[in-house]
Length: 247
Image: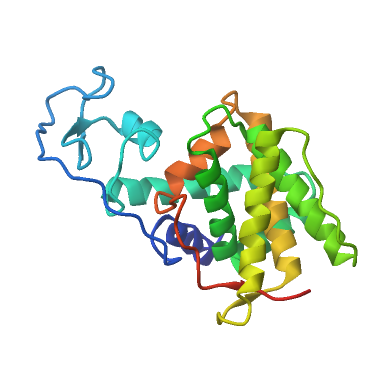
């Protein structure tokens, strides 16, 4: 993967998309390199955590950032870790795909539509944040149903695919509501996405969620990974500034 694509992933970990969250309340540092990690009490505390005000080891920092620790968005460890882990995960996902045409398509989608993908991930994270029983499999099912609905529309037929699971259907509804809201505001914003762009973005998101479901024993690996690598996402965030044009 070239330098341009690597920079793309690094930009996603920061505020390149215009999203922001209030910074975590900072606590005074009580940190020395000789003490053990405040979280696990096993490994050396080699990082000064601005959210905890104490030392933390690299492993606990990586595993608990954003999910259990209210990291400030300007934390140097958060920014560096997010860009590295996101790139590493995406490369593993691409290498797992056996179809070279699909690999090229996913790379092209990430190159062309990072903002739309980022915003759709925000819908997933916001929905699942307070539903700890909600799993990657259910998220993948919801994205897949939304994807099929828009594919059907692209063929000139309006039909909404629905899930029997109410939690899954709840996410389908939020994804559809978000995307339709963007289309409603089509005349007010300067950047347009085609219906085919929506389909490509949902296709990539569905494939990534399915990849985590296949390769991880953690039933929420994808949802937690996405939350850790997108700390700017808030459930009630106003995601303006883009529109979706007709097909």
